[in-house]
Length: 206
Length: 65
Image (cartoon, rainbow over all chains, first blue to last red; front, top):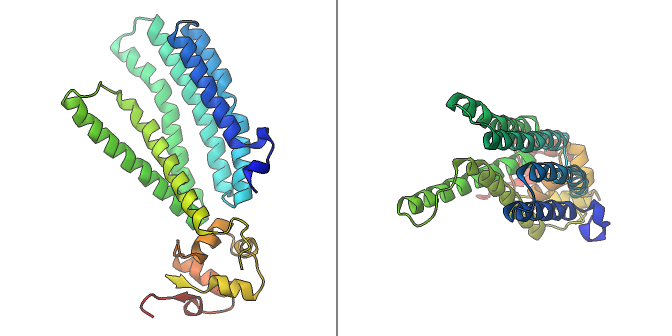
């Protein structure tokens, strides 16, 4: 099924675009000091609700292209919960850190708030590889994860040396997970494009 | 590894989706195997052979051959 024929609200791209647009607007308002950090956090949580229709549209698309298995559906639900946990944990941690003078031990505990959901995301990915019964989909997920690993190691090492030679500014180490996840997404897109180039999307080629 | 999956499927007038359901895998898996982009594991190769009532060697062609 082509996404071009679907109504807007059933296209994953529509909700992904809405999510990024909302994040961009909220970030711009925050950077320009038009809103305070608490309002920004509340708006971010509200904007995150778009993940629910985005997930539904993505599952429907995966179902139509033959990529949806029971394990994929479980993975998507678990990842959704972990993502909400991450946004909540990050927002609470930043709000507390900005308003309260914390000891080293307290800062350590606060840092765990966004880290625990990230551990949940990693556990979700590991469970997917264990639960996926379709060996080709499992193979693709492993390849995508290696693609992400390659991306984070290459970019991290290169950036580290650029930092050593004072060419670029310092980047916080927590970026490793988002960069790995983005690399994994790019890997999936690249393999998906290769699939489409090599095959008839109707699935009935004789 | 080359294979005769597409020809065998066409002979039986089966769609990729129908074969995928028979094997309990995704249509994309059948597509990837058929186009030679993915070599199935031994258990899946046996399963494919069973579905067509053939041997693995009748379906999958070793590059040396």
